[in-house]
Image (cartoon, rainbow, N blue to C red; front, side, top):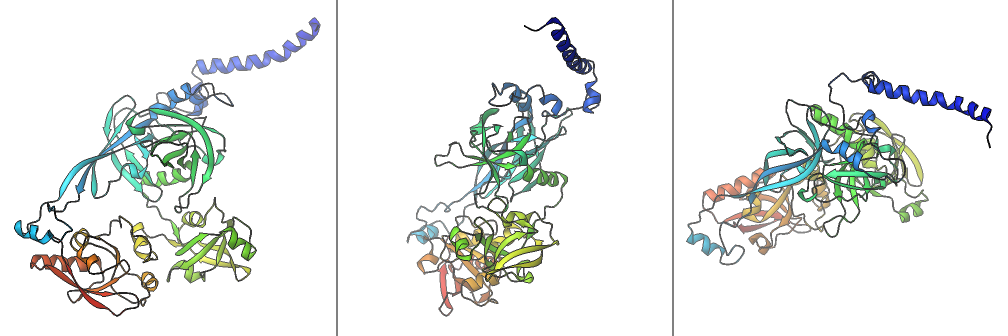
Length: 526
């Protein structure tokens, strides 16, 4: 049993600590918190500010409840909806479209074309305020039109049900990010980005959003992977989580247990269409700098080398005596681009970029994209059994449309259903073709000379006369009605002219690999 003088000695040690806590409490209660936090009286403070979060974050380990955390953060999370005007593909009322009786129906109707038909569409997603003056972050795909549509209105709905029309400030399709702006006199509740690089596998996370239109839905889980790469491009780096994420969660925040936004919910892997515990969020370390540029109206420039690459497989590494999970294999080099000018060759393996190792978690595309164009950097490569060092001046990444036009063309690949914004509606509707302007790279891939001018067929409607005449993906259209076609607009002009003159066909000169060019008359669909 402790002696009285021992207890008295212990109490001397405890009192100062208790006194320190009581003084802190008194300062906070007495208004000294303003000087500690550094905020003027009445200022809107972030919902996830440290001073606020210290009272609501769960204890370490498995939390007893997320209720306080949710109550604090939920006001800053919003629902986002769009109203769209979408063109509906029609066959001009012809029930025999694509059959031998198509022309008969057109003649009975005087060959008149019906006006395009439209329907109203909508999209639903989530977002969150990042400032008191009304800037909102979401995914680009949440506020982008569907198919042949235009977005006519974007509405932001707060948890209290109040709605505001939003202005689209900026979008970045490659990272799938967008910034909106809404206005009102009062400040908006907002949250801030955290440091996603500090996230660890097994950490608790909370997702708040609008799945299936159910606003304010909260789900929890853990970080399943901190850098999940699915092979989809430069910004294919995600936080994977088993927190339930469904359609409508896109653009919403993924919070850590300190209330920091460490990710923006973006996609799910799901054979069923619903959550199966595999969700992906854009890391804050990737999103925050892009969002800042979009908010300020600064053009986003990314680095570019002009090469086609693939990961180094285990077999390739074993055959060359290389370390596994290191480097990427150069399949092709585009002429006139930075990689060719620096001396990079097909078959090279790039081991590091600017002294940073190329790994599955730190891909070559990601490293190069985040280097400012015009910067000269070292590349460490492996060629013919030895390591070499090249200096390359990074170029500016072309737009997605320019990349699509210059990509290597595989005539044996399955054609894409949607060839993108450069497609011509009139060529697709009247000739049944989707075409691309040929480039030296595509020409070489098709076995043509690099200086070939024309349009390459990317897809053929199997119900069209072009298909019946044997036109195929990979054929090159050299001329139309004896006029050279070097641009999509050239072919469009010929088709429009034929329509205006009531001609029923267009004469195309077509080049196919291994064969001499030949003329093919293709009937126009009405």
